[in-house]
Image (tube, rainbow, N blue to C red; front, side, top):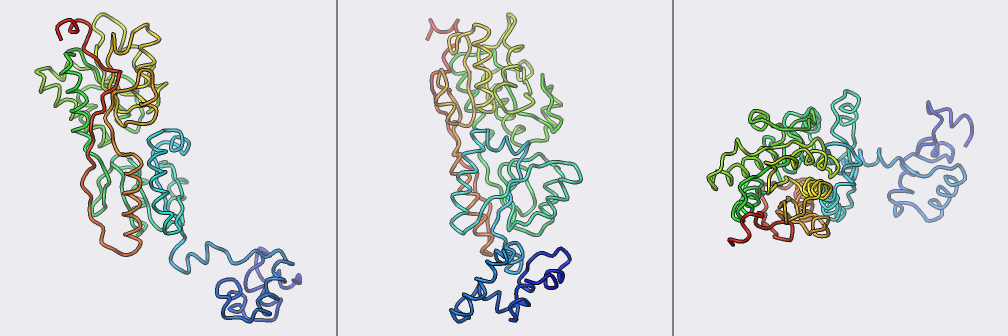
Length: 369
């Protein structure tokens, strides 16, 4: 291609038009060579592709081609915390695996975006080229949710927040937490504690009082705490006497630090409900570091039934939820929405307790059982 032809575009970048001018054919003819080869003779198409290869032209801009079709072939996933968390948290990995397996059936890929609050990140969301959005468990009122909701693309929410007219794929968080705490009380535990995921975007760590619990920005945690409180009341215990410790990050190291203080002193709990398996594993680690046996001195119940719960030492009693299946359910809704079908709101998935070796009656009750 001549320098004159290259100068026809501001950047000098090779395009369909500049290649067409170099070859002395129409832009449509060059486009057909890539997109509709049946419209050209084999000889003409071979000449166009040979000249394109000689000049280093790799074909039409896929983004522009997708926009002309009204599709770009990507589903945006808006994730809380960092992108690295999406690939390191076992439950997130299984969810994304299920989602990817489903949407790839329609030739779609995933484009992950962290839900950040700064203006540059929000502008990037506004400009992101995606066909649909999946909002993966974000707090109420997060500005990134408002941005993706305003894009006019189909949206499916995982767990939270609730948005008008938007399907939510969730689980029965409250009943799961009730089942977990009820298991502890029926074993005879009276001194209980709860470890919670972050309740707000400020990522505080430490005791959460009643007002902090009530005003939690994460709906999932409001539901799980309410479920735990219901089981406590059912056992004729006072929820105000149950310490709720908020952990700044959903990972074992932070949970171990939070649990270390909780597990010292004469009134330490004999049973702990952790709102995720990651937190429960941190409690087990803290107990071990303090010389406490699980379940001999402390019973621990988690939530998720992640692979790490099954392979833990001891294996973790936990509330099981269908992690990979939930990703697939979200993918089904996304695909249906992109086909223009009416998408309803699915019922929350059923959860159930899986009893393993991390729970037992408290030390003083064993001889009576």
